[in-house]
Length: 132
Image (cartoon, rainbow, N blue to C red; front, side, top):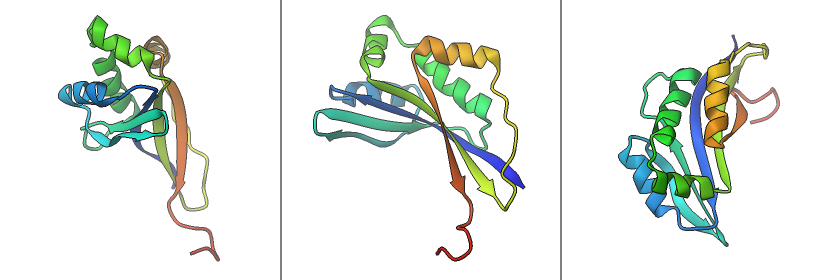
């Protein structure tokens, strides 16, 4: 079966209260699934897309359209975040691990212009034998 794409999450972290930015992103269609929460001097929040059965390209595009569409004042809040990370989630199924997933040059350029980083998280669908 190989590795299957699951979703994209957007994770942000800042040294300021993220409530205003979270509200803004939610109003533009990005559901916040965790946060905003404060831990020590840092605030964090995680978002997902509202798409059903997303592809990596469509989910990433949805995030980028919102970020690219921010007005200058709102974009300053985004730019002040210490962490702006698109987390590409995959599930590894069965014994077969290798799969190929291409991210277009255009999508890479757009991600770069937002100042976001990319993380890939691979989840095991079933625990290995002997582990429960």
